[in-house]
Image (cartoon, rainbow, N blue to C red; front, top):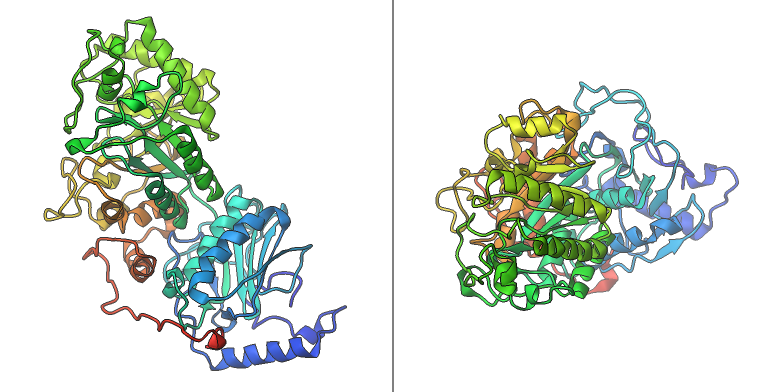
Length: 581
């Protein structure tokens, strides 16, 4: 095996007996010879190197260097990256049936899969790639010359006939590289039981990094409550496509979903309702901690939202002293908005805010805390602004960065403030002015990425107030230029919200996420130069078989040329044949 990753322009790895200082054993030479002979007779890998979603920054295929995983393969990893290696093995073991042992050791190493954490700059594959020239059917380079450092989330992937190597500066970069490797195996890799398959990965090199640091989705657990296991599955969906933030809309008129020790009735009373009169529910602090930890292992940051001063009917039912009239309203299970708010003139309200955001901040290791702030229609403008400015200060005192819907824009700025813009018209003077005062933006245009909008008029669930959003519409816009007067450098990233007034089950959540979620992920991750609807829809089509294998419900959008009859590999019953195909 080579001691450094083979470059994509090489015809294959250096013969083992020519490497200095190493004399391979006869058995190893025999295995290598058998593998190479098999590769010469085998068809090309069924997935192309550029079929990845989101599109990588640089792709340089080498069709002569496909790698085939066999039953005796192992994973070698830098000790600090072991958890990523464990997750990669967890993804690959069920369908392959291979044991895939993991070993920590000094690198370089000889195992077929190697994950390396390295602080050295990651350089462009030998031979270079012209930024203007297509390097694959679906991706082209975004910058010529040396790639240099790839930041906190970038990675380099090299595939040769001898093995797969992922190199990154951080565990997050290794994780994203591992997700790319997962996509380069045949679609059957996402199945839960062993199948007979040639587990081939296409040869070549990828150098990749994200365009925006914030790439996320929001799940509304307030309108309808979703148990912990459902939320964890959503985390997996985000991580699969390199999205790195999960925004949880934890409180609204219909339910309060997070336990707060200092105000226990919020969850005990305010958490037992939901849209349509169902039983509701709430997360204990241990439940919430489990979600946060599960997400962190997958390099996803949880962003909790406590919506204030409006959308608070559930809180007012639990604590009437927070209401302007000090009288408890009836529980609400409808879908109207804008009628409730906490009393902005009462000091008790600010004690409540401090207690709640203080506890939630203490439970949340990520840097963000979302204040909501939208649709407080009954609050006079001057009182609304005063409330927001004080609430922002309370959040900042916890050490968290304030995030809020763009209705917060007129309020005074606090350091680092982030506005989440959900408008449908790209001209927003108040938001542009807030950016000039220092705010950054997360873009969630309602008519592009609100995933509760219907795909088409006949979609059985969802809304249409922001328009119908098919996959093409979700993909065909540029976050860097979408809002007039807002420069690209002020855009922190993108987020796709899923409100759940009409969404009641995990299957319905998945139906609304897929296939639009990968479209949004590509806008957040991939260089602008790779954005091409024709190429994207072709790459996306191959993921339908992956979702089917994984048991993920999705909408078979007519925008996408799904394979008419995807091949289902034969379930393997005799493990003695593993790795021989």
